[in-house]
Length: 191
Image (cartoon, rainbow, N blue to C red; front, side):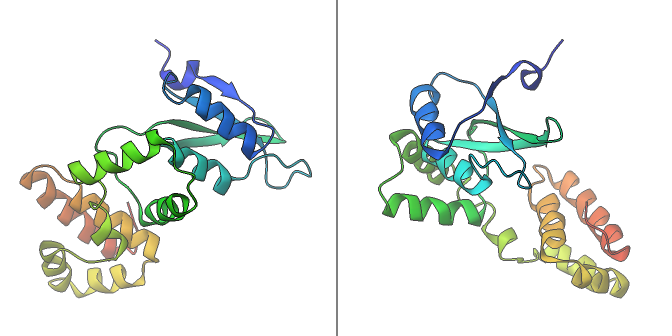
């Protein structure tokens, strides 16, 4: 059975204005599309990643899987943001700028308000700030090699380890993820 990604429409906007117009017309009715753009190395410019993401936020959408179309083009799957979807600090900063500029559409503002109401707006705050939760900190402190490995990871790797722990829904899952994070940290690796 083909997945939603296999059957999704492809959209190739000419520029940011065309992309915004597509979202205005389709954000409420589409379940997601592949946005196809020339690769960054191409002389042909249409829509860059930052422009794409800013317009997505305006309408309550989010980017996802990316890949290559051919030697000249790439694609990224975009869809309406699901309830409970987490918000990275970068996207929250973009939303603040877009709101100040008066560019947020009602659908985007509704997605932000829903995230604030269900807690998904702030769930990544501690991860983005690289705050190590007490259980993981104790486990790292008990293993000097793991602590050293964790400290040697770039911020992106530390965020991945932290998210793997804080996103656990059950205590048993969290304990297993703490143990796995310590093992990965000892190896100087992220999930």
